[in-house]
Image 1 (spheres, one colour):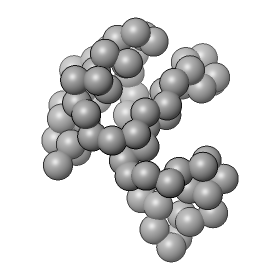
Image 2 (cartoon, helix red, strand yellow):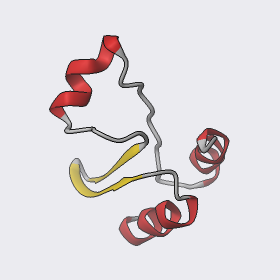
Image 3 (cartoon, helix red, strand yellow):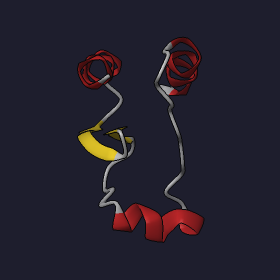
Length: 70
C-alpha cells in the first residue's frame, strides 16, 4: 500500500535512496539480525550510520523523519 509512495519519493528526492527487502524465508536471518518484528520497518542511514528507525506505514511521519535526517 505504501510502495507507490516510496517509489515516487525515490525518484523525486535528491540524495535519498530507498531500498526494500522482504522478510520472508529467504531473508529471515537478515530480518532477525536487524531486529525486525513489525512490517513495515524503516531504517534511515546517513553516511553509513543508522540515524533513525520507524515502524508502520505512516506516510506523513516517515516523510518528516526523512526530511529531518537529510
